[in-house]
Length: 415
Ligand SMILES: Nc1ncnc2c1ncn2[C@@H]1O[C@H](COP(=O)(O)OP(=O)(O)OP(=O)(O)O)[C@@H](O)[C@H]1O
Image (cartoon, rainbow, N blue to C red; front, side, top):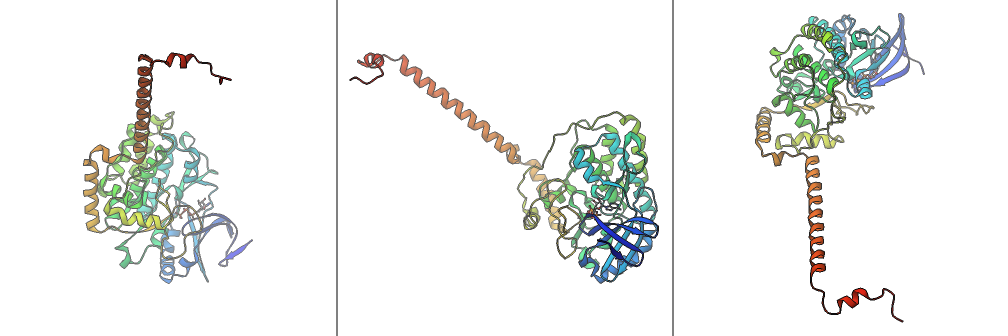
């Protein structure tokens, strides 16, 4: 069913849905386009419409081969739409779900493209703020890059900023996707370019290992890990990639690489990564099922209220701004309560306490189940041995008088 968007565009068919709206295949004066039609409740928000108009010049001016270009931004009655380059391919999340993990060379090449796109955006003063596999499109119509890697293009620039809460709520809310949030965002600092580098390194880690470094479990635990924990080392990770990931996941934003440096460092590594197979990671590492610490309990309750916990990077879609839940099952932008200074301090305490707690207390539920099973098997073996010993003792003992007759008596009843 064709539908007109403004005076210049017609959309025909839904390509996909996200938390902010629906993406349509459309037609414009210069050929096919992708049109992202923002959700009705967003389109009805006058503050957001004002911001949309303000951002038009910045977003439509970003022209780079590794960025999905925004051609136009349309405000038409109740429609608020972004008209974009149509990318023929899929997104990186779909590819990751299909392949599990990518080879180091392919992952490095894809992330180098993303870093190139970010470098152009950062130079134009635009921070993406929601870098994640869903926002990286793989252009299968373009000739492949090194190691046969598909060319990557970053999309959804400025969407997080467009739908960001007004200043008075920004102090208490976080916009983003928990697994990819830089620690300074959680601590309440203004997001700068370095937050994109942190999120990009998180995606690189995920492409190589199948999970994000700090994800898993409920949202409060994820936020705590970003602020207090170091990146867990990964067996078999090529050294060069490990160094880059560690630098870009530094807690201090100033210690992270810049986007252009990141692209150069990754491309320099490509020759030594050629032919290296994907890392042998367990099929699904899953999150340890830890109980929430007191400081995290509020997030665990919020997770339960929205239907589950954040396993890997996909949990419940918490609405970006007040309004209906997105009509998609995909985990998307999230509006979270920002932890207070006291809670942040208690995170550090809780983290230390968890580290210092005797190992028995830190056991995951899976480990406990394994322990219980082993114990049950041991008890069964002991009981069997005890039974056997008792039987042996009974046989070995002198038979009581008449016992022999009883033993040799015929089995059939006497007539
Ligand atoms: N420019 C485009 N060209 C082709 N397909 C696109 C384009 N932009 C988005 N899509 C498709 O539409 C789907 C939905 O995109 P959208 O940006 O709305 O959501 P998302 O990025 O997956 O999630 P969210 O926006 O909630 O983070 C994408 O997964 C992708 O398959």
